[in-house]
Length: 457
Image (cartoon, rainbow, N blue to C red):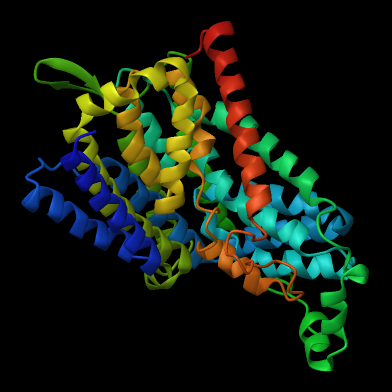
């Protein structure tokens, strides 16, 4: 690596570090400063902005935001709460599975904030240390992103892979990531089942109970959504959303079976079929329109909602981060290939460490895929390996500054879910690492079976 190449890499890393310190929109905006330095000071040729992924996120987030505005998400959370309260003794197992599948359905991990205080409430009512279900439930809400057919990370993987000669559908990706991530969650649950002291043996918790004010704060209120009245319009919005998701899945399944139902066009004298990226955008935007017209969802309420706002923050983050990092990598592909050739040739799965490290810095699985997958393909790593290690793109639990983790700490009235004195000794570290390691190993195994035994990929 030349001195100039190293200096330019430092520009990228410093921009990511400063952006992470400010958080939110700053991740994308400050990456713009890094991009400007690379282009105007070092004269690197700017790469193409990741517009395809951005359009997908806008479509999916708009649909999910309208669903939230319609009250449909309240109904989904209510159904989840009924399940959890029906089996309170198994909250440490059911809570992460519930948050996981909610994210798989909706495509964003920001739908679970309402559920977190309920998980804590159920744990306290059964005398279970809330840290046990809360920490892994927060982790699982983000894990679901790589298993959702409408999530940006999955769509980006499919789009970039097709551009690199590896045509794969969203469903085929999920067929690898879903079993891998469920195994990762179950391993993390096994660890969490008896982690920490029981509440009746925890001296810190017992000391809090002696203070009447803290006792009232811990046990005086009950968090629930069961008293909410859900209108028929809200339920209809959920049906519309699930119908849209079903259409996307059916098209992908037909494509896997070799049945093409999408229209075909002539481009430069050659037939070209409509891509799944465009299909998903059309279906999601149409579903949002149906919810507005037929389910009385208010567009202004959607824009004011957390799901839409957090989704737009993700758009800006991916826009800035991916554009800056792709500009650097695109200008140094030959050097990267020469530098990493030996390691990648012997241990191609080691690209998982790069995916994880980048995720720690940029807090977005979609941005990791958009930034790193083209580089991985340029290094001639086999596609089935890249698919297998996809769970490794989730690493932003490592530094506990992600909104869902911070919110979970605040929702835990018992004070057992914590960010440690030394920053990295926090409640999310162990279950997060257990999941990533397990899911990545299982993902590689599943992808290997599909590739070599079944000949699917």
